Amino acid sequence: MSVQYDLEGQQRVYEKWAPIYDAVYHKFLSDAHSRTAAAAARCGKDILEVGVGTGLILRYYPVSCNIYGVDLSEHMLSKAVEKVRELRLGNVKLLASMDACRLGFADASFDAVAVPFVITLVPNPEGALDEIRRVLKPGGEIVVTSKLGADDGIVPKVEEVLAPLMKKVGWSSHFKVSRLERWAERHPDMEFVGVEPVFPAGFFKLVRIRKRG
Image 1 (cartoon, rainbow, N blue to C red):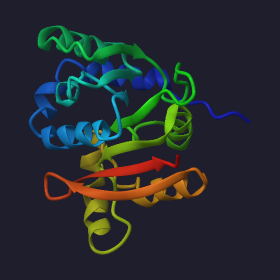
Image 2 (spheres, rainbow, N blue to C red; image 1 turned 180 degrees about the horizontal axis):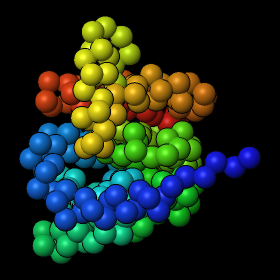
Image 3 (cartoon, rainbow, N blue to C red; image 1 turned 90 degrees about the vertical axis):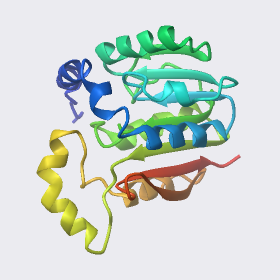
Image 4 (tube, one colour; image 1 turned 90 degrees about the horizontal axis):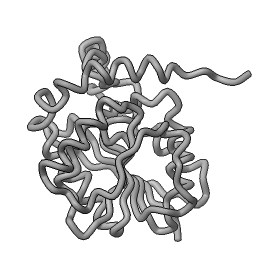
């Protein structure tokens, strides 16, 4: 039996968020955004950003990189297009509407794939990671930045209490770092590099997964 995902429902949510997303998240996520761009750029010049949204990260990529951004929401993408024009970001080569599980790129197209603040929202995260793995070059990296739940200690208990509030802003404490580790372990050509805390105080995390050359 095939699983049906509510992509249209997601698009309606993103349509409501598009006009106010920058005002809510620009400054708060600036550290995470700049570090995501830097981590991806260290891998090479051809970078895909899955979940580019309103384009908040685009300004942080070096001008020497070729940036391709995709997102499910055309309303969010329209904001990204405006940023590219206003900031004259000539290194942004493409902004297009795509499902993360059905990327319209050839195998091994990118040196890095950035996945900022979207993996916990994708209905089929493992399916999206499989597709990202397909378009990633050997030696390249997947850079995932998000609110990822802790696996042990007192933090998971605190996160459980805050879960209803976090859900309202699109964050989840139920998606653990270990889920990304398990996905990498299932693929012999993938290596879980590590996880880094990101401002504020490690509330967000940056995870790197490398495709072996």
